[in-house]
Length: 356
Image 1 (spheres, rainbow, N blue to C red):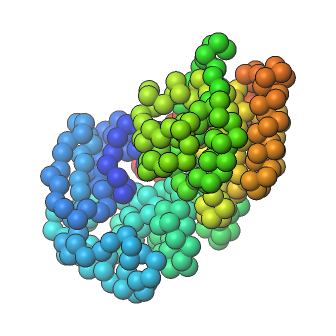
Image 2: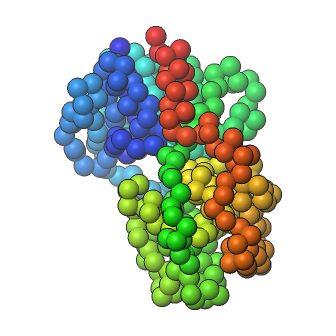
Image 3: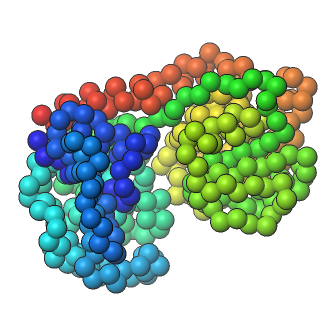
């Protein structure tokens, strides 16, 4: 069977949902093309494995820029993307039995395609497009209507009931890591991930705790907000796991604006991984995570004052030995089904039922 998987970035062997979908389908001996939608330069196709090929969609006009996204009228956006999809000559969409569209720019393809579609809803449109415009929610709804199935990382109760028969909740999970030796735990805070983070709060924390280092791992520009704040940029798992393991507290300081965009979201790998190490996690409330859960060592704040107060308390408890790296049974039971290994079993079963 020929399957086209469409994402906004190249295929790699990662724990991202769309990459795992591509990997599983390739191992089932389907002919899988993974398409990057879109690029303003031409890139040659390349064979990734025997069954997986990497393709690139070329924007023949090359006029669109992300900065146009907030203000360009919706009908012009639809016209632009419909035009470049119909005019491209490198990809014959009619060859494919199934097309799997990831949230974000790939959903523009639903304006044109008549294939059987699976929608991989990795992020809600307000995150995928970094915009709260109703246009993007309408574009997503069109994709939902045209899809045979929806694989969603967002819980079902955030979704319209009339599409529940298509809906399957599947989160890619996290890669568990063994806790480090207690002697390696240092006076360090760590954040790992993406999104919009609260730099003023990070600066306040760095100024308050000058004897702690604050590690920021992710694609963020370096800022002069304290000599003890270290920006690493993007790191692979093998490079960041030791930094997380050795840190004493994981801090997830999302901005208020970003937590609004996360209002339909729940636990992500950036929370599950430190929880699996027995680390306390301090984070801004968002989505389904609104209250502190001491059993999971999850400390949820609503403003800067609460964040600093909770951090003071956490540090005192760590220094007194009251808060250690022990993991409660409740936390273990919560984490077990959410490992990548178990999530992959669920995904494999679901895809086998859908794609026959």
